[in-house]
Length: 632
Image 1 (cartoon, rainbow, N blue to C red):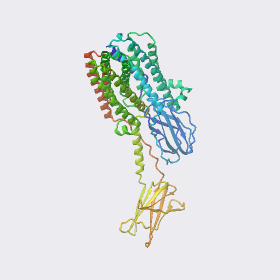
Image 2: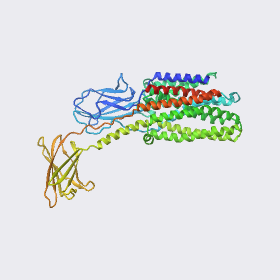
Image 3: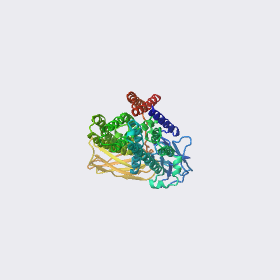
Image 4: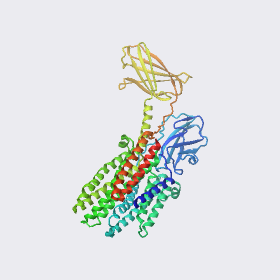
């Protein structure tokens, strides 16, 4: 029961963290005023952009440039007091012209930056395409390294604590005081390592917000202001407080509740990580973050436990198969539950952050996830061998298997560190689902623009049919394709001259002409020109001359307009309602099933480690199931 109390208090810290910082969705542009590519009759009074999640007040900005590229002098960008998802900047009256809005925001949910641009016109038409979003999957190497160190530090801290509580203490630590002392030093090293990793994470996130390097961030004059005003900084202060309390405990003499208290603090530190992650961008934020926190906690418990195991085996006598057998048994008790729950929460996270095979195969996040799975399979296989084979031979007192166990666990450690590299890449890259949604939005715009037909006309003269195609059919440069057919319906390919004469019918602007040339690849006569110089009613007089034939003359009349505003991509990455209900409910049922199954076994066999992890799975499974019911 002692260990159940530990986990219960840990969950209390979990919900305390939720009370400190509510989290919502992910930072993509939703819409703007003025709208992207719009043409306005009068100057707007402000530029206001809506994002799909709250943005950092002090580290998000809007920049305005005129048609020459010069920056327009503006007031400071502001986050709306009533809606942190809105960023705006007041404007003084703008003269007529074309303007480009550039924005860069930092998510107040997961700390990732996003940027983009769009154009609008005052008194003029917008005729150039300006994408509203920029797809950037760049993963900085230093960011991956810092996040990997942070994950390793969690594994050491939580894993060593779990090994001490659930493996070493239930055995006979009095008989091995030197190993107990060794585990204490390993725990201290893991705790200190976590503190260093926490500082590196602070510098990394600050460098993202400042848009500077890590070294520049270290001496930045507003670094402390970032800690006290940003969402990440506030969570980091909670992490620092919990870590500092733990460090003070480590400096005190060992007492009865020493390791349980450290375990509770470790859970709280892990939760500060999940509260500022990709999971916080999900629509069902509570269960997404809880699921991510459980996944990170169990992974740290398992991987750190493996590291502790291999370190302890190196310290004990190589012929002590009895002690090694007991360690394998106790470690397997909670490791089996942890791995099963990792699979369940991992599948939920994959659905949440990836969502499709195309996103899995064609994004940085998805490929890193594939590498993680490739490494996880042999890691799981080795764990199964140790449980089913090695444990049996150790029980038979076969000393040789102590060394084999050490080698197998050493290989597990290597694979686990590789998995953490893949996870570091995943946490550094934007989620695959969002990237895929952006690509589909841009592809839809490009497809719509590519299928613009322009103008098509057909005239029949002296039993000869003439087709005229003009693309795009607006003011400015156009492509003219003429396809004439003779009396028998065969394409005419022997024209000695085709002439196009352009007359503006609304007033006299003079006459211009073009002389298309035959293009055998199109079986037509083709030329491009800027003859439509203004909007209005135009006449094209076409003359076709052929050897030994009378000239053919015909007129085409066309109304020319300015190009419509380019279409801005609209990203739709919301999750279907029914899919959310099913995924959340099924995940909850699976966690409840795992917790109940392993919990019954642990209660019968008095296995406290398995019992504690099982209860945690049960509680979080119920939360998932309740969330599914509430969504429905």
